[in-house]
Length: 150
Image (tube, rainbow, N blue to C red; front, side, top):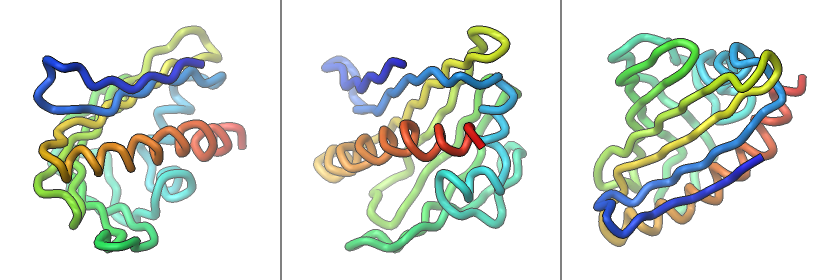
């Protein structure tokens, strides 16, 4: 299991970059990222997720502070079962960011998942990135792992 968070000085868009190895086949991990039932179980509730380029959907959670609990997303690209990318916009964000999931099969029962969340700018972006880094790490370590184990 490897977890890394990077913010390189040459990168003008600070990013979250997390890698984790799951003891599950790539198709199982892919399904956890691409079905509304799975996303609702481990990430946030969604009623309208569909795996189609250009499809807009919402993720909903409990509001906190200036965050109303709604994340608006649009699927920008995917290549089954290796990559999924979508925009991520919330009321607290000045502009959209991008979430990209990359999967690599290491064996029949082991998958490397890489999460990149990019596009944070300015002070608000820095602060948001700090909060989301903690959240993503927790979600991937606990909730996704537990979901995959079911």
